[in-house]
Length: 408
Image (cartoon, rainbow, N blue to C red):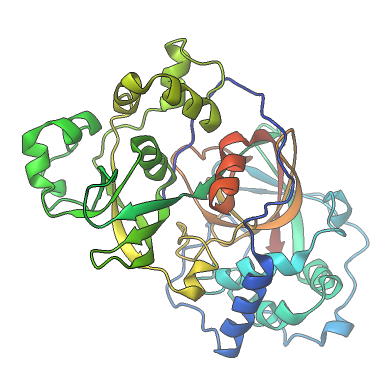
């Protein structure tokens, strides 16, 4: 899943719930249990581990939950170097809120990790699956015994970073245009690879020659060009699709390519034009409602255009988000996008962030990336799908600290 964030100089955000209600954790737990009963098998294709990361050791057969050994009393000072970060060895006591987190919620994301595990974590997947029915105390005891926390810092030693968020838009759509459905969502055109960069957003929407090359490539039509832009920026979404026979189906549209034009933030454009002071998505939406005649001008300020592929969305898939860059489905509230030059895909991470939008101290999994997610202490937090998830994602921009949990 490839997504972008809106650059903004605004630091204000209205108060939102610290609990992400779209995360249907009970459903996710049931889904995970079903997957375990069906015998999960790790995928044979795995992303490479960083060459300068510590080598994993083959774990001995796991003991019963009750007899997991206690963690060492102290930590030995040391660091590990990554291309864009350094990891500083710390004790478990440094992780804020570690004893309070509901780790059973994070285990759904960890089991997804084991579908395509990083080599360092593959030996732990048997334990991870068995611990899916363990208590949070058993899960924490196992983590203390098998993993070592490292504080993530910039090469110069700065441990403070930035947390933003993203989500999966949920839109009404129709197979044929009409009755308000006027904005197309396209599959990649056959000529996409023959011209780089391809036509700009403005050219795609206005040039007959570009339109001709997109004939027959429409997946569906949505009502609002701004909502379509949000879908392009997030990189994936759910469509409540009105079919030609009058029935309604639920489908997912996933990222399938771009026109290779540069991404430009419409929020930054509005700020630079002096048109808004609040460049969060709620602020942008308010401006478009007040200035409907300038919406195209705003949208065309971003020349990048995203093409999609359609995926079925059954009951099992609907309990998770789209697949991230790691190749596994994202879990609301427990998956993050990172700079893989700082943190490899598939790494469990302790995240702490405090701000006006939400308070977070929790176990998450590094499972995705984004073009704007760059730097040592940088993460994009997957909030789920639907309006409330979108509201939180549109406002979240606050401080961040990260700790990676690496095999001993």
